[in-house]
Image (cartoon, rainbow, N blue to C red; front, side):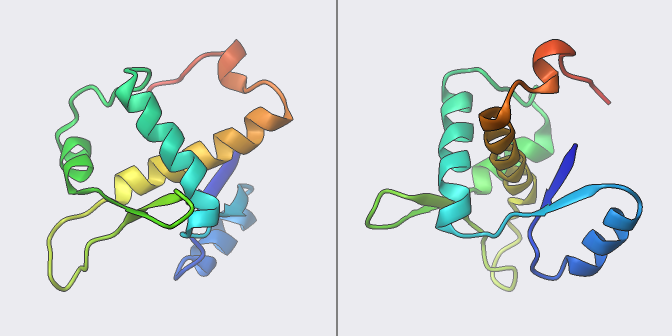
Length: 121
């Protein structure tokens, strides 16, 4: 199991979690690392392969989400300016980071979710 994290202002927490036994993996917040998982997550939502069950906070974050696209059709989420807006997208970005790790793990073999299924907390 891995925990993907944005290294910006999170290295101390990542070191603590690593010391507690978690495998920590940096997922930088740029087109190179976020384009493919963002496209995968959006595709899964549009095709109804993923659902948040109507969770009001996640729905609000999804409504706050903006996407930036470069000249090569790469995309990434854009965080609203915290000084100018109360909008937040942290839960969506966390899902994109999780998707980025799923893509990498899928390339290496079957996922535990294929044999065990999902666990709900």
